[in-house]
Amino acid sequence: EKFMDHSYFCFVVNNVFCQCTPEEFYRLYDITASYLKSKFKELKIGGYGSCGFYALTDTNAANTGSSSRNQYFITFLEGFFAYISEHNSPMDFFSWHSYTTTANNSLYIDYVNNTLKKFGYGDVEIICNEWNYHPMENDKIDRRYGANQTSMLLMFQNKGIDMAHYYYGKYDPSMIHAGMFVKGMKPSSAYYGFMAFGQLYNLGNQVEIKTNNLPDDLYIVAAVGEMGQSLL
Image (cartoon, one colour):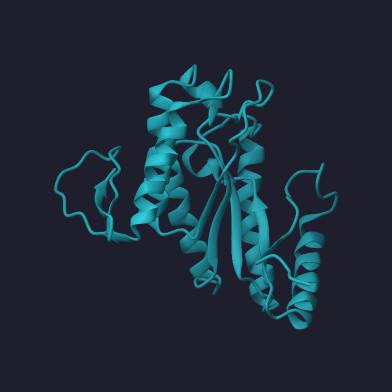
């Protein structure tokens, strides 16, 4: 039977998903990951779906709760890697969520990279497995929302993370994180940003852009291929 490429462990730092102490979860990860890796070497094992690093930028993003909870996400992460590093636990990827600006997420990626290297996991894949810039932070899904989402894609590409999963594309008025479509299932401004990025991706080869004195909030990616060249 064919397995998925990745095996994700459930969310933590939230009592709804994991009713245990941090130390109990660290031990759970070590035992489970070590056993699975010994039996199924082809599986990619990792986790753990961190709820974010908002405390690093003093950001209280939508639905993340109090600043003390945000700080706990950081404390949990440091404890987790200290434990699995000491026990030499296997890890093929690290995953995390983020619902904030492109600039903040760029800083968070640097933090993740530095933390992984610090604890000896600098070669693992980095996956932002939930991201969105909350539509309500823009008052409505307008062209600014599309620009923010597109800039996130470009930043992720330039930062070199391995995967980023937008949450989510479906139109659902009850979901504050929807945004790919608007009422009547019409494409939103974000939809066209994803479409444009897809065109870059299909060209196949990113090329370096040499620039001077660009604003910090301007993001650019260029690509070339058999079908031509493009810049976004």
